[in-house]
Length: 83
Image (cartoon, rainbow, N blue to C red; front, top):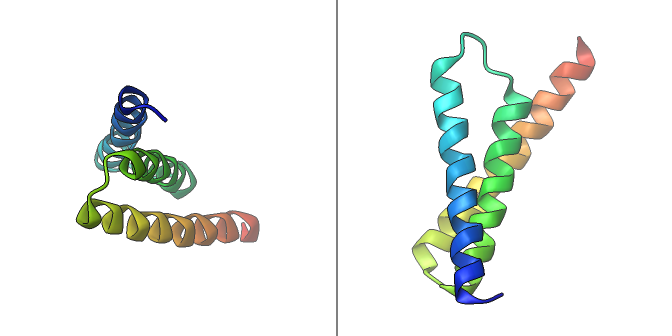
């Protein structure tokens, strides 16, 4: 991945994560599947861009963000199936 492509991927990933945050603060009832999917895809994209422009602290944050999103998505999907 070129530097420019990594920047674009990272910016889109960051945008998805900001959209998820804004969404969670603006709706009356949060759909945690949507919220966690946005965070999951955003963290993967931002993490991919960090493989080109590496920063240990940011990469670690994205790995944790990814893990939390996967767990949250799993929980949200299990709750949807139960209803």
